[in-house]
Length: 373
Image 1 (spheres, one colour):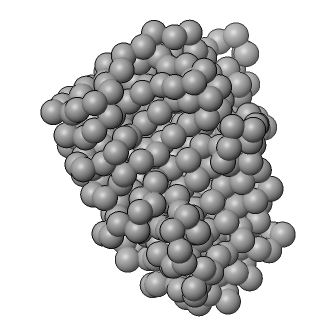
Image 2 (cartoon, one colour; image 1 turned 180 degrees about the vertical axis):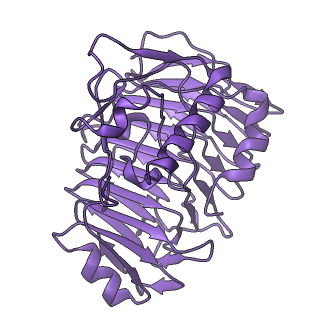
């Protein structure tokens, strides 16, 4: 098999990964491969993962329960290695972000300057852009990222100072970066701003000290996943408001969004997240931002499913207001004060497979792995 042959998958609305085209490798194993995360490990994040490969009949589905998943994935990884394939041969994405290939179809470039970063990020061509060192975009500076891009850090010190702006784009991956936009007045600059964009996957980033939101998702954006990220502040400018979904009550759109295994830490005050719209899936996240005002709210016309999250020593951890709907399950409120709601509203059912980690294990898991590390 030619070394350039790539087995690609696409995410279907029913949660089934299917190949774009039949591939010789598919006939060798009807294996369950789950999402291949940006940190290069094959991870099992489905409880009942169903996959279709190659020429296997459409009705022949394979269901793997969590206890078996590790050995199955190990066998899959071994098979891939034997075939000369790696995790990069598969599409990005998990949760609502769906099919995310980012810049896989294009070249890989390494950038060390703001000028080069802006040039490649705004190009109409697909690129994987590796950020090396610290790139300072200047006072209230920003980089506009076009469609079909992967923006990733070279290592744990890779940093962008300024706003990463996604506006009207699709198929973007942002991973393994430190991002800070600590310039301008309060409520001025987001760290990562997602507006009117679809199929966006943000994972393994540390986002901190932004004068507006750390990551805000607005203007009708749809199919976005934020996972394994850390949010924090080293100062208080009066607007330590981390994550807003929908910029106003009339900022309508699809807003199919997943947040999982994220960590809201020191200095976060509000909006962790504050969700106004859409199906919003929140699971296995961790909060320990003592001294905050509130953490998570489902408001306006949101439908929020909050599962196995761990709130530790915070105020007003979880609430709903206005016409917001909320369904809760398995959350832990440890040494918290204020509103700690449990709710059984009728909400959406996620169309994808996922594994819920035991809530008691969430603090250790998330603190060990969330952020650019």
